[in-house]
Each structure stands twice: as C-alpha cells, then as structure tokens.
Length: 94
Image (cartoon, rainbow, N blue to C red; front, side, top):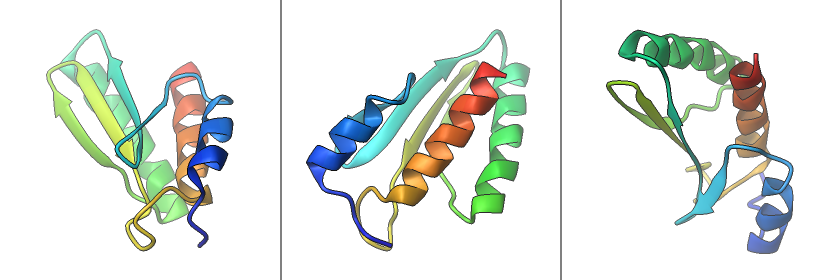
C-alpha cells in the first residue's frame, strides 16, 4: 500500500465532512446523545473496519467518540484510511 503525500491528503480530505488531518492521522471527534449511542456507532464501524481489514485507533468517553486513522505498515495515510473514513461518514449520515 502506497503512503500518500501530504498534498494528496489535503486534497482528498476536502471530500470528507467530518475529518481533519492532524499529526499524521485522519481524525474525527463525534458527540452523541448518550454513551449507548456512541457505543452503538462503534459497533457499526467495527463491522466495516473488519470487512476492510483496517482497524481504527479510537477512544470513547461517555458520549464522545474520537477516531484516528493511519496505516501503521507505512507509517502514514493510505487509500485504506480514506476508504474507512468514507464508510464511517456513510454510517454517520445514515
């Protein structure tokens, strides 16, 4: 998998609604009505991540879910990260 250059990442991220590029990661932070809603979203995302064989770094504190995407094999952002980010956005938009 090819590591994307910073300029490529900055262009591609413009197509996403909920993501920023920070410290070598695609990052989003989402707030939900409750812990249960945040956890339910994590479960839905987990199935997509497993299907893509690409797993996010994430934290969940009460109703907040923060997701960080990076391809560790190349120590950077790849097409896999954008594919998962797009899947996550589709889930969020429902």
